[in-house]
Length: 361
Image 1 (cartoon, rainbow, N blue to C red):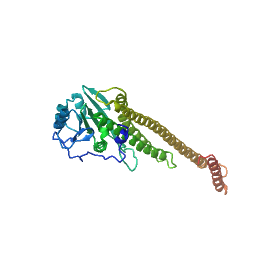
Image 2: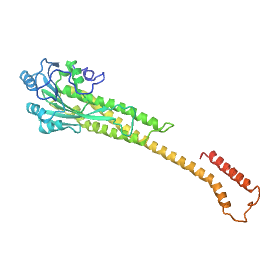
Image 3: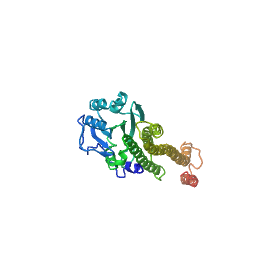
């Protein structure tokens, strides 16, 4: 029944960014409600029903579930849904205000899961202040007959995911846990996409650092490290919740879905390893850049020292003959001046040739 689960969940087409307002079903509970639908045996039921009518219908028939999608709800907009589904106050506070670490909490008969979403910020050229990773959040309340998704941020729309799942009723027939898995898979797939894009930026910086021009700067490397740290903060804390979803028995989850949570956890481990490798690579690139700067400074100092040594010859000779003593060698000789000048040129040429041969000039 679920042999094609991952195929049903993944989105091969580019994902649409922004708030999804494509569905006509909008709850009168508030403008933050993007979508409210009832699913029975994996099929979306007709009719634009508010949340209270939808959940009453599901519980009276004892079949199907309600999926409500919200975008940055206020306390007032969320109050009706909180009372209707009996959500825990601590989870509600996290869902309204956001800025949470990825986590999984159990409250009575429901699960509260926080995912940190990431989006790659396109840029023509990486600079010292370029934003590379933009983050948002998706909170998921999962119960026996409902799933509520709360999204914060301007990216990570779940509209395309909902439409994809609606084209795979065998997936949605597994209930709210199938939606939770789909959201987790979508978030982790976005992690993979972002790490691939960040790797391209790292390759560009590495190429610049080791190019003949050596135009890559420490500022770009530090900026990438800061953005990589932001990505790590989104990815690393999600490991424990994914392991819990994949291994621990939970009444809110269909046992058949756990295998696919393990697959998502494996992909998350891959992202974590990539981030660690990127950080180590950036450290190596930074050290190489600093070494190049040091070498360039040493070469400049050698050139300066070589020219100082060359100029020391005429300085010394002119200094001696500039003392204006009456009794000095060749002072009153007709060819004294040309001889001194020729001597200065010859000695400077010999020293210059020696430095040139040794690579100082």
